[in-house]
Length: 244
Image (cartoon, rainbow, N blue to C red; front, side, top):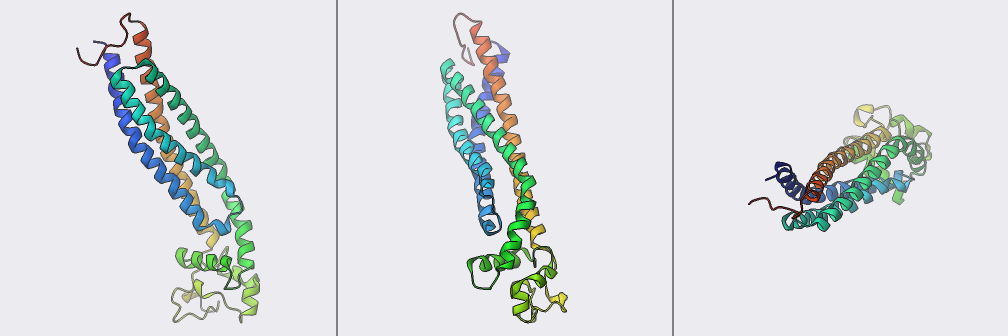
């Protein structure tokens, strides 16, 4: 019995099971990225940052189907099935490379995009609009105040029209806070841009690590298919089963 074929078939069966779990994991990662961007969509002008998430979800669904194909092709010892398995792995590998490329590109654009769009949204703050609700939610959830820091509110129309105060969403404790900058102990002091930037950068970095891990798994899968196919082509009677 050819140990190379036995090992390769065992690897493919294990990979097929891993692909099922990987498909679910990638779908979760893609959904998590979409949810993270949705929470801050009022501060992001470039909607193309959703492209990596969409690619990741599509790859996740395809990987689940790939696991089923891999099991069937390996157990039935089908050369056609293994060939199709290899083609799909190559396609998914290309998709993951594309997703990683987009993640890398948008990591560099997030900071610039946030600074421009967040400044515009904060300048339009009136306490009632949809954008204002997004600002209040952002400041209270991330415990931040202003674009760069709490002093950023000084240059906004809200500050001058409300007795030189910042919104109550900047307050640590609204029962004691008046929104005045001369009492910074009651206010969040960190800027919102840095908080959102760090959060989104971490999300993309996490996604890139997950994609890289699954891409490495696919490389082993492609090598295993190639080993089995090459060994079988050297045999007149075709593909031998795992056990005699």
